[in-house]
Amino acid sequence: MTITAAARSPAATLASLSSELAAGRCSSRALVEACLARIDDGAGEGRRAFLQVDRDGARAQADAVDALRMRGTALPAYAGIPISIKDLFDIAGQVTRAGSIVLSGRAPAAADAPSVARLRRAGLVLIGRTNMTEFAFSGLGLNPHYGTPLNPWQREHGHIPGGSSCGAAVSVADDMAHAALGTDTGGSCRIPAAFTGLVGYKPTARRVPLLGAVPLSPSLDSIGPIARSVHCCAQLDALLADERAAQLRDASLANMHFALPRTLVLEDMDRRVAAEFERALARLSTAGARITEIDVPEFSELPVIHAHGTIATAESFAWHRPLLATRAADYDPRVRARIQIGATQSAADYITLLGARKSFIAGVERRLAEFDAFLMPTVPVVPPRLAELLADDAYVRINSLVLRNSTVVNFLDGCAISIPIHDTGEPPVGLTLACCANLDQRLFLCAAAAEAVVTQRG
Image 1 (tube, one colour):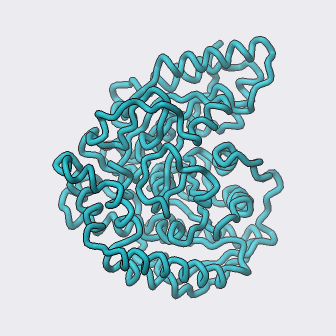
Image 2 (image 1 turned 90 degrees about the vertical axis):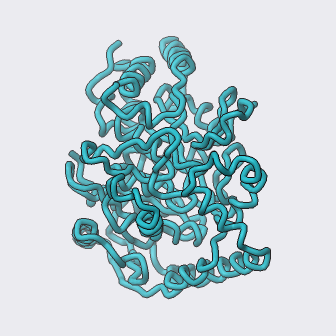
Image 3 (image 1 turned 30 degrees about the vertical axis):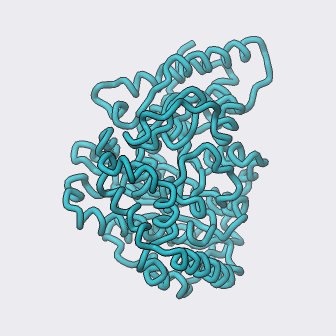
């Protein structure tokens, strides 16, 4: 069998690939070999996007699926499709480094993380471990240990991919995998998706078990997919949460009411993001959605709440303290500096943060109760170039801006999705739709309806 044009197209979705496999127009082995060829292309980003490629394991998985399919065995819908796994997750027999050199001497994992096991059980082929910001502590995607995979947009100019799931996004954008497993503590699925023209999902955190993933901040961490469509993310989210997928076929904007917060999240947009965001809002309105601007004063309180440290800095320092005592010099200095902020926080500071979060959630939930979702730009700027981040002060300033909007949802304990809204070849821009906790099914319905009118397919 040979791989078809549809199967290797950047627009190929899980549904289209599943149809190709079921009809016998391509094989899982062909999909895997095509991905491996892209990874091994010396002119590409495979060596920076992946920290480990499981060629033998992927081929064996693919061959097993193909053999079952040839015998007429009933298989899960997405069996045989290659997916990449962020280096944060345990995979049986492999070392989980979390993008660091500090953990490179760890023993191989004894078992798959539950999220990985659920994907494997669904027949998805684990093609390799993707690069990431060390310990997931940045929204930019830089990694000084293993290199930074470059954004596919204007690659020759060296734009960043977004993080922390940088390799995950680049693996999908460059056809080295057809979906990716990532994590999202402050935007780490949504930011790289927005920066690379993909869809990224942050679920209500409690829906997907965190066991077997190196923590950044257990109170804020969540596990989600990066893929090529809302439907792809909905299907993967259902597998990860071990739930039935949302039914998206008849999604319509006609009766949907969206909130547009005026507070914080619309500030400091660059010209390109502002133009694309306004165009997306106009398209949503024309398609029947009602959009109401509202004030959310709780959003403006976040800089004050976090003035002396965050939940993430406190919880990450607690986990890293033993390693920092002996291996501090082996950390990325920029990541280490953020973690060490936690050393200045007291137990009282941490308890105060948790209380502030509880009040924040209650206040925002009251303001959003009448709306189906709220809207904002995923990131207020287009992807900066690596050269713009050489100075530490520029890195800190841009990282804070890139993370600003997405961290709102993690602090809210909500769910959010980023969908692309730019024209093909133009600077990548993402639109975020978000809801409060446990409204994931509603959010997917809103996002599917929105995607149909704002995403430009090229």
